[in-house]
Image (cartoon, rainbow, N blue to C red):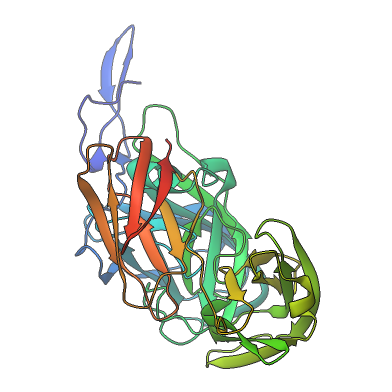
Length: 392
């Protein structure tokens, strides 16, 4: 068989040639292209309501222009009509990040079944995207290889392809979504098993893309103790906060823990008092503190470091500037700045390559511009500077 060169999207013929001549195939075959429609950064209807089939075979979900958005494989009671909304992020903007700075793909899917939930049953699902989208994600997060992709499924209020307005107390599931890209093609296909219901999906290299969102963290001397206070904007399956202290800012030890509320979409406040702090201060009188936030599944993350300078007339929290990760491949976080402080990054020739502003907790997100050369850069906050290594 010969597939016509340059065959466009839609139905085409196959030419079969043998010793007696050529003939045109019947029925026609279909050439598919991956969906690239809709307005960038908007969640728009891509697949109109399409009757579902339950014969145990793979079936495409196609946009009105014939482009493929997803595919499904299902056996069981009817799912009714299936429809899909898609958001494609603007490729000229930095790769998107969740509150813990985990990057995720510049394409979201929101699936709906008119038949409602399918509790106790599983639907095989394939999500299609462009290799260029996955390549941008992998530059920002080297763990986001095709084989290591995960799908986070969100189910709850605001199912509109927007991660920012997802409610922390709603349902979040992380599903394995290994992907492949056939040789010579411009697309990839992530495959996953979905149980009980459809909803909103996005792809990431992270196992835990929706963590506790730390709103603030302070430390200050109060008489003979050091009082720590922190607040979270949202939590999901959070188990506890372990309080750690250090004399040098490098070797930390756990000095206590505080139970977390678990899951919440409202602000939660916590506190801890270190009554032994003055006895463990360094020769400069500095004590370093951080939080180790642990989820119920054992995963954990660290807060920014806070320092307290203990001594007569030297009472109060002295945040220390810090950059992580360093080296970085696409983004970094600066902590310890004054709220609202301007953060600027310069190359070796003194040219400014990016600017950011510290939030209320003194944290600034630094997203490297596309095409930024590898090398050592200077990050300046007021009169203070740090060096940041950018690698590829």
